[in-house]
Length: 118
Image (cartoon, rainbow, N blue to C red; front, top):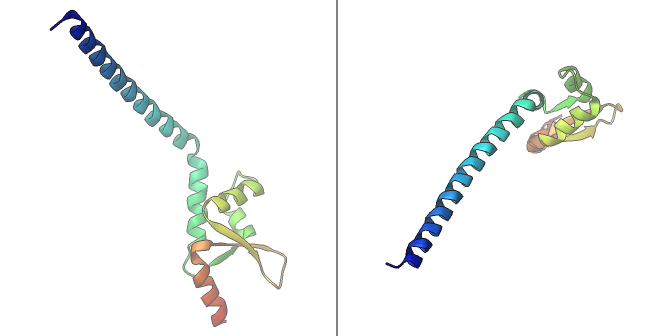
């Protein structure tokens, strides 16, 4: 083999090794960044879990915003509404009052069936 061939093999091996180590370092950095993001947003995620559990209760398809807000502390009303949108909840109101009510879009058929049964 000629010197040019050995030089080409050296360049290829170096490029592959560099690419592999860069990929490895970036994947480790991504995992670290993801973990830090989750830790920083754990409180908000727990609020979403709590809201989802309340809206998935088998006896209640709808919950008043007041009830949802009382179960969550430390967040503004707008932040709570944002969380509700993020979990797939929809806002509604009732004919007899001006209060704000929320339900999960995934339970819409169940909600309609309950209203038809009343």
